[in-house]
Image (tube, rainbow, N blue to C red; front, side):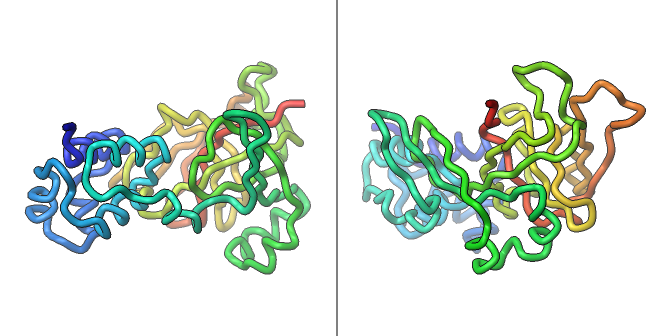
Length: 242
């Protein structure tokens, strides 16, 4: 039988999260958590669910964890994290429904993003995916040509819609996975909604250097923001190219 503790530690490493950070989230000592992770089967189901939520484990990762024995964790326990609508349109293909933040609504979004009544008034956007992953998703209409380099394979021109998965604030102190996700949406408290790539991260200061794809660096130079000035972060999972 594979070891659940080792599997959890492997995901911690992949996410760039330390055992101490997970222990702090679980409100236990690092030594206690270390003992838990030495077990073949993680001994506490409630703690296991908290770990799954903290690590934002995918359904496939949860299934792998369940296959290692012990009390299986029901995916239904995470229904509150699912998007508002999910429909299987063909075997292995799903249609997901998310709120769309168009250009005209972005100023209001900066102050109302947490208001459910405001979100209900936003238009909706549908996109297709290969798997019904849990998480909070939102679509944004891009404004400006800072991310347009003329390459259809990667450009994000003005007017295009990008779909992002929100990165929980508890993960911000760890390294954002820019090796896995090229493009990001930052909801900045003063600069608005910023779509950029990450050039550098300083984990100690919280400074992030953002990079534009547009080759005109006189007009679009790299610049630094601080996480203290950020309300939300999304990793872009899809560009909607017409």
